[in-house]
Every structure is written in C-alpha cells, then in structure tokens.
Figure (cartoon, rainbow, N blue to C red):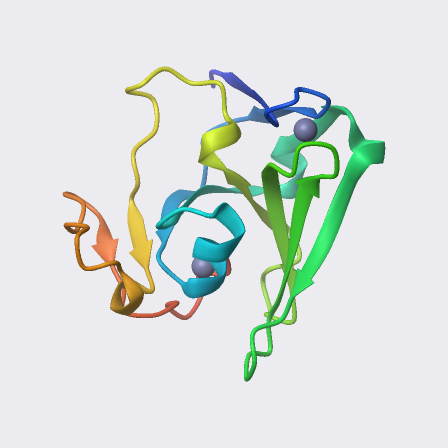
Amino acid sequence: MSSKVIRGSCVCEKIHYELTGPPITNIICHCDNCRKVTGSVFMANSMYTKENFKITTGEDILKTYDDKPPGSNNTVHRHFCSNCSSPVYTTSSGTPGSENMLTVTAGTMDLGNEAWKPSVEVFCIRRRAFLHPFDGTDKHEQMPQGLVSD
Ligand SMILES: [Zn+2]
Ligand SMILES: [Zn+2]
C-alpha cells in the first residue's frame, strides 16, 4: 500500500494538517449552510476516517461552530481557524456512523490543479442555477442515507 500524504493549511498557515491514505469520497455540497460557511457557491470536502487526519500545528487556535440545522438530528461541528477564519474540517454527531468520520475542506489542501475531483454531489436541489452539474458525480437531491457529511 502506498501511503501518500496530503498536507494542507488555513490561509494564515498557523494551522497545518496531514492526511494519509485515500479519501472515502469527495463531496460537493450545495446546501445553504455550506454556502454561508464558505461564503461561496458550494462547499468541496473530502471524507476521511479520523485516524487518517492529524493537525500538525495550530490545534490550539482552532475554533468550533456547532451547526444544527432546524429539524435535523445531526449536528455539524465546523472547525475553523480563529485567526484567519478558514474552514478546515467538520465532524458530526447525532447520526449513527458519523463518530469515526470527518470531512476536510478541499480548498485548504495543498494540491496540484488535477489532484482533486468530486465523486458525489449532495443537496443538488439547492444548486445555484448558473452551475452545471459536474461530470461523473453521483447526484443526490438531498443528503443520502448513509452519507454523513456536510
Ligand atoms: Zn489561519
Ligand atoms: Zn452542506
């Protein structure tokens, strides 16, 4: 097994992390909360098991916003840099199976242009009208059962 390490950081570079192993999946989320958190038109995340993610510097300045959408059993814990505000990763609670997973923001990964491709799109019902669906993704109107992410 190759153990390729992906490194990433927030924009001020006080927080650095390492990812080992391949992601479970790469997700584009079009939901309103992800849009607000990124300040952009969708969020791009990779899902990993927690053991494959390690904060190497700056853990002490991470802050967490607990995002509980109305009517949802799931709380998304959005971990961000308190210095520069970059969203770094999310964990979630309240959904069985979510305990061992996290999602890491694709935009904070130090990758080449070709290195990241989405495999799933969720909350497509909320996709901004100017955005075309991406080629080669599994598309879901909302969050599919069994996929715990945001
Ligand atoms: Zn930062
Ligand atoms: Zn979302």
